[in-house]
Length: 317
View 1 (cartoon, rainbow, N blue to C red):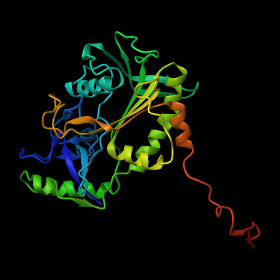
View 2: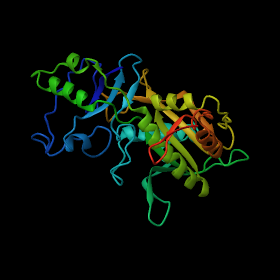
View 3: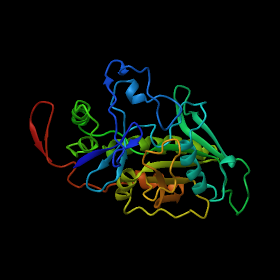
View 4: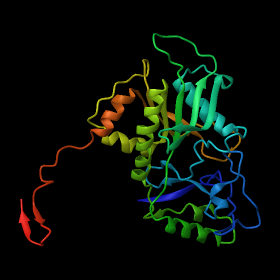
């Protein structure tokens, strides 16, 4: 597998707009600048500040799917009390229209960021967002406007990060902007979808349970590669479609908006994102957890074979 750099400091690489390299020092961040502004939140680029390359997302060079490699790219929850950017508003409004009503206006969408979630006396979690509708409307036998815990994970890390960094270093040192060099496929680098999914499982089990016990619902916004990885493992699981009923858990998959219907005005050179209607799940939380924990099947050969006892003798069972 190979990947290409899809976005560099908020600018997509597959256009005629020349991308200027930012000189990064591993110990002091962007050279000559205290911080670099992030196009997706009202704050600095965390990657550049800690001395990493300001790459927002990659592409699978074969499927062209986007893999987000910055935790702030999809919809940052920080800075907690800063005004939302138009990109954040765009993403959150899309979510609200999907889970509440297509007619909901931005003024009706209420959000809190980085909300503490008490699990035990010694352990606190934090929800990316809590979202509610300002003027709930009772339009069915169930309550469609219950509050939700909203989590954002469009991607995650990759394998062979050093190889990717050296590739960008080569582009940095070229001396002139060269998008073709930057977007040369980098082999042996691949999305670590398994790691991203492992982190999500804990969110499902802990935050989802808190949401249920508190009378709310759970919504996860993920990338297409995470969704496809998950669905392959749930192939034999049966999840009721409760999109028009009393759902308590939703998966919303964000993909590239190739028709540019929801272009974020604060980052006009970035890759626009939309919810993929064919990759959404509205179901029951408890049923989802049951399918989650019922993966795999018995392995008859697991406990038979050659053993060694603690005296060093071989024993066959």
